[in-house]
Amino acid sequence: MKTLTQDEFEGIVDDEFDRSEAVWTKINTWLERGDGVAIYRNEDLSHRDVGLMQFISFGSEAAQIETLEPPKQLPDIGGAINWRYQLWATFRR
Image (tube, rainbow, N blue to C red; front, top):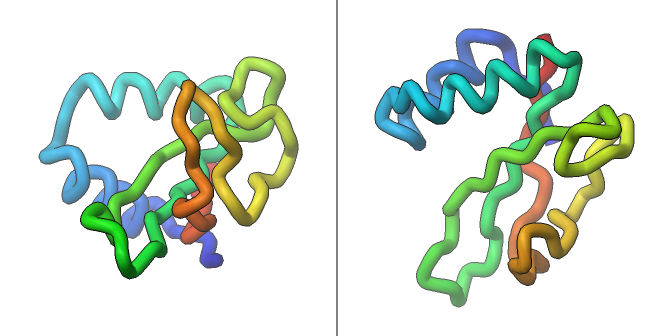
């Protein structure tokens, strides 16, 4: 797991979401309240979505993951079973 710089983080978000204004609005909401962003990646080599990333807020009671540090494996949140997703990187302002 690595900690991303501002430039690295912005590049990954823009690449993954084609510079989506709606995505940046959501991420900026997380960052403005002091949350971090955990990036999980599908590491299941036998799955058709291998390499797919999930961006999750962490660090406050309002975050998707309320703990100060994100777990190594993405918890089953939002009705999804997420065992394939492993923590790949984090970002904090």
